[in-house]
Image (cartoon, rainbow, N blue to C red):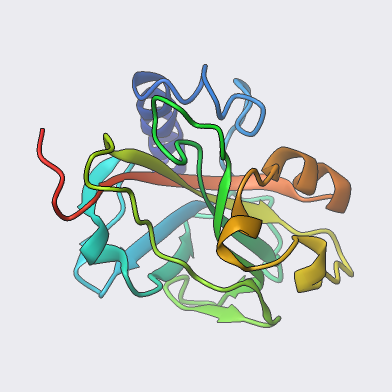
Amino acid sequence: MSALAEHAKALSASLEQAKLVPGPAADLITPDFKPTVKVGISFDGKKTVDLGNFFRAGECKLPPTITITDAADDVASNASYTLILTDPDAPTPDDPKFAFWRHWVLAGLQPLSDGLTVAQTKPVLTEYLGPGPKDDSKPHRYLFLLFREPAGLDLAKEDLGGEEFVQRRSFKPTEFAEKHGLRLAGVNWMTCAGDGWTE
């Protein structure tokens, strides 16, 4: 089994176990979804996101680094991607009335030949706002969604809505992707709780 196939199997199992698919992410990540790349996310070069592992909000204050590796054979070497970081559990998993919260949107991501370096060829669409669950909330699930861009895609910040705190609420990533011809290519995810949260 290839590294990408093994990753796909582990991803599917993790999403099912976390009740994301089936669940609130089922429209985004359909049952027949097969990743064409592996999305790597690393905070501070120390801790890597790995299919639902746990972080504290304090570990995620700064934007992480991104890698795009293990591309399927039919992925063009000049492929360009949009990354969306979103929270289906805002403001709390028990009352997700503001899902999906839009934390970060980057367009024009292109993996370089080493696969471990990603060039950002377009302006940031939504500036990074780190996860910030309240200490009295159960951990939230955060999805890093990587979409293959169609040729000639030209998005502006206005296409997503504003970046003020309340304007990030209730983002609809499925509708956004469909409107702009974005095809899901890779997924990673983590859980995160406030620094003062206790079980």
